[in-house]
Every structure is written in structure tokens, then in C-alpha cells.
Image 1 (cartoon, rainbow, N blue to C red):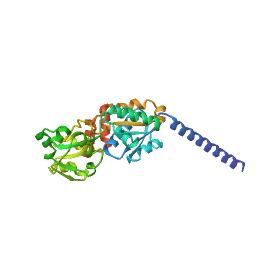
Image 2 (image 1 turned 90 degrees about the vertical axis):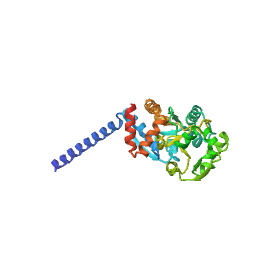
Image 3 (image 1 turned 60 degrees about the horizontal axis):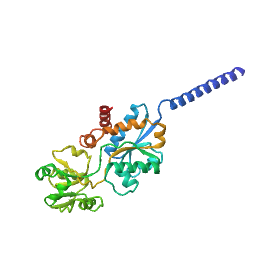
Image 4 (image 1 turned 120 degrees about the vertical axis):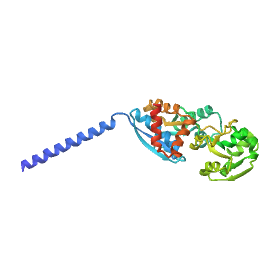
Length: 301
């Protein structure tokens, strides 16, 4: 009986030691190296691409990254300030108008400084450097029409509006920052005709010569096809800038200040042309966004 008791005691001691060693090993592994950073993104191609670029840059520096992608644009800011993610790609115009509810501004530097200061004070969130990539509103015309009539700016467009067929999306005709804002700055846009189409069909409508002009966004992938589509210059700067920039919780940035340098390097490599080309690889060429982001990151690191 004594031998049996000793055996049980020995087994118990061994099991206790094994458990203790395992626990210590888990703690050391958890505490070793860099912490985990939760990178978020909105639920569309461009934001997924840039979120993945941020994640790759952090992993390249030794950080563990948890990707929390495809968050609805209406809730991602709340996810950040509620400590559900640590950083994500945001747009200066969105921060200014949608989050802060500030009056419209059109100077990129003024917009950036405003959102940077207000986010710091209100949310304890830092805007890192903004990139030259501007995903703002725009007007797209068929390149054949652009060449025929010499239209490269919205001022040019206004002079020839009576000869052009407008592919509207309905709300753009009524929204304060849509056609009414353009007409206030450029003068009346009296189209030859105006018909409402679904936004997803606009490039097909232009390509099929069913319309000449359509509202769009300045980094849409289809715009790489300059033989067919020309993005007009907003020469009177009616629309606000939507420059891409990382927003990071201060708590995370204070604990890991080197994050700034890594993510700012990504922002410095992005401009409107490059992000448009990346969008095209995903939306037009149907490549996976992870592969496209990895290829681009490898070219800039």
C-alpha cells in the first residue's frame, strides 16, 4: 500500500512539474518578441489592399498581426475607438465630413491638419502621414469625346454640356456635394440628355456609347483604361480631398512608436495612379488582393 501511495505521489509531482513548465513556456512565448497588432480595413477592394500593405509592413518588422478586415465603413471608426482594432486606412474627407461633421474644406493640408488635431483631442487617435492617393469624387468622360471636344477639366465640360449625354446615378443630381455643388462653381450643366443608371453599370454604359459622362471616383480600377475613359480635373477644387492615411490608437502608438516609420513608408509609396493600378489588378484582372498587395510591398520595401 505504501508503494502504491508513493507511486501516486511521484506521478502527481511529475504532472505538477510538467504543468508548471508548460505554463512558464506559454507565458514566455506570449511575452517574447513583438506584440500583436490588430489591423482593420473597410469592406471594399482599395481599403483591403492598403490594410494588407500595413499588415505586411508590420510583419516584416517582426510584429504579429491579426487581420480584422471587411468591416463596414459605417462602424469601423467605432471599432477603433472601442479597442476592437488598433489601426486602419481612413480617408481625410471621411474623417472631416462623416466623423467630425465639419464644414467642407478643399485644401488637402488644411483637411489633414483639422482631422489630425480633432482626432487627437476627441478620440486619442493619431493620423499618421497622408499619402498622395486621393479617392475622391470625379467625373469621367469617354476618351473619344474628350479628344474630339478638347475636354480635360470640368470647366471644359461645362462649356460643352449641351452636347453630352449624362449617365446619372440619381442621388448625385440632388446631393449638396453633387451636381448642385458643381453648378455653383462652374455654372449650369445643361446636358443633352440625362438618364439614371446603376452605379455598377457606368463604365459599361460609357463603353457602349450609351452616354458620354458619368460620376465616378478618382481611383476606380477601370480608369487605367485611358484609351476609353478620361478622368476630368476638378480645376476649381469643388470636391474635398479623400487622401488615404493610417489612423492608430494612441495607446498602441505610444507602446510601439516604431510603427509610425513602417506605416508611413507605405503611405509615401502610394499615389492616385499607383492605387488605381492596384485596384485594377483586383477588380478588372480578378487577381487576389493579398497577392497584389504582396507584389507591391515587395517592390517598395
